[in-house]
Each structure stands twice: as C-alpha cells, then as structure tokens.
Length: 66
Image (cartoon, rainbow, N blue to C red; front, top):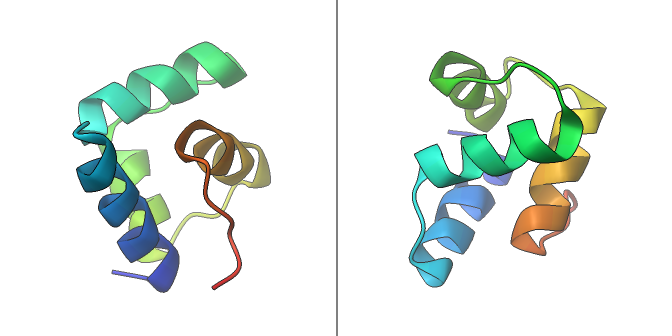
C-alpha cells in the first residue's frame, strides 16, 4: 500500500464509506471506467492517472502530498 493509498483508506474509514462507494463517485465525477482492479493499482501506486487521483482527492477532501 502506498502512502496515498493509506491516506485514501483512512479517509474512507473516517467518512464511514467503502471502496465501492468511492468507485461509484469516481465514475460519476470523471465519466471514466474505473473498477476494483484500477482502485487496487491506484492505492498501491502501480497506476497513477492524474484525473483519477484528482477526483479521489476532491471526493475525500484530501491532498496527494503527504
């Protein structure tokens, strides 16, 4: 898990939401295809699409920077 991934997981816990909710929010916000596989790759740092990362940050009200 990358540091960004840890931040995302913590934000989801704090908001009492799950990854499925976040995936749906990302799809609605970006209009892009996004699923659990892409989520895993994003959280582990193997896939870094700036549009997706920006959407995650905005939805969860977090920053990419640590």
